[in-house]
Length: 90
Image (tube, rainbow, N blue to C red; front, side):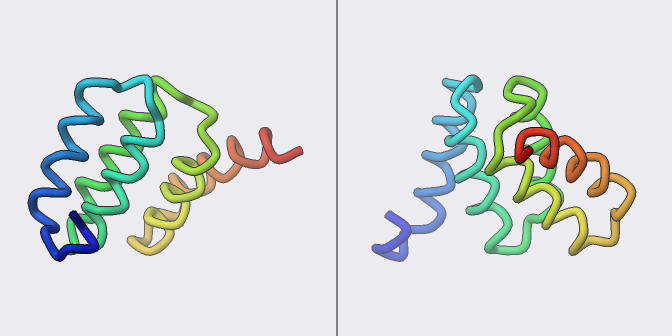
């Protein structure tokens, strides 16, 4: 749907998938990235944080969250997630 320029529909479906299966970190990650593209960074950050409550060591979600938080000047918060990411990268 994204490739067909049906972004709103794609985001809605990603939101539903994330809600239906909160244990699937990939759904939340892709949904957060989709939210961030149209400038909904706060919603993207919240989505990733909720996902990490269920999947605390999901590499993609942690990396995306670190990046988004850094971009929005929340360096202390970004650092805590970066430390968690470094734990799994060792």
